[in-house]
Image: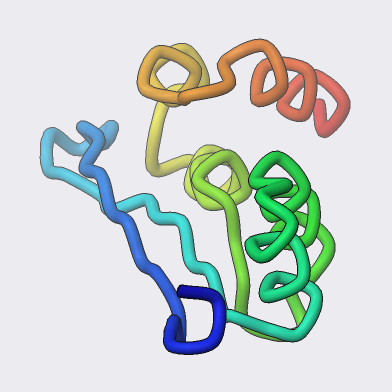
Length: 97
């Protein structure tokens, strides 16, 4: 699988402060580091690679949620409510305040 995978994009929607919806997403590009982690079945490490590989076009859902909160398009508590790792997002948002 690691050799044939090009990338993965997952998207969610969250209500905005204007009453519309905004997309948040995970984007994984299958770099050599990701391939190695997938082959070793170290899937937790893949997320660490994503967090550190913005220059490769990768982003985690928490990074995406944080960006739309910082742009004041979404209330922080709503972003935390939809996060798969709410404690990490809450901590990141507190450190930006």
